[in-house]
Image 1: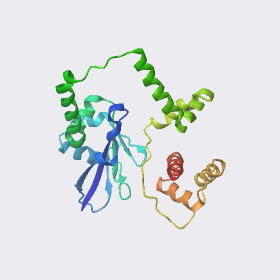
Image 2: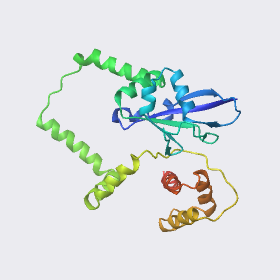
Image 3: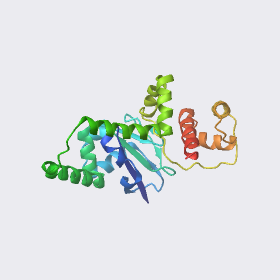
Image 4: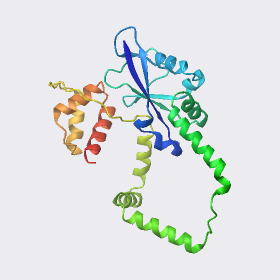
Amino acid sequence: MEVKIIFKLITSNNNLHFFMNKDYDVKFNWLNENENYLICLKKIFLILMKKGVNINLLRNIDYIHNGSKLNKNELDKIIDISVNNTFNLYTKNEQYITELCEKIFPKIYKILNSTNTNLNENIEELPKYEVSEENIQKNNNIHFEEYLNDDDFKHLLNIYLNKPTILNNLYNYVNNGNIIEDTCIQNYNIIEESPELKLLQDYNTNCSLEFTDQYLYNVLKHFNKQTNLALRYLVYDKLKSKE
């Protein structure tokens, strides 16, 4: 049977953040002779190698599925993609990013090449701008006014002034490889008591997340009782509902 697999490029490179959305995801059809939705990292390697990606690159980037970084020492470990078939390819290495874009993400590669070409061709045609203290002050005042009218900026500034360590904790939280994605949570219509569920219930009450016990159980079941991933998803879901 043919199974659709989606690859997404993610990186902490600021110049590429605007490509990290679904418009630039790449879909491949994989022919699975076993007639199921089970795959392993070795198969992922083979799919990417057939597209010309170097094996050394594949060994040195990270693979994230369902909010969890895959162990590259467990190439044969079974991965269920029946619910979530998206794999995030993560690297900060600029050379690896270029090769991945060239071989796997042609839309990004085309835009990057086009942008670089246009910059090189037109660099001498850029209009000269007279820099004066008046212009600098005017520009700074405009941006300052924008910042003060932004409630999110004022909230972050308040955190920086009163609890600066939280910003460092946030940075560590979003950069440790556990990236939460949109996913489909199945409804099981039953609740099986467990220490893991009790922990989620306590967080749900103490943090005013306001989820039902059934939903807590569904999320916990989806993440195979991994409470850290379940909690991350619940926080993500709560914040998303406020948008």
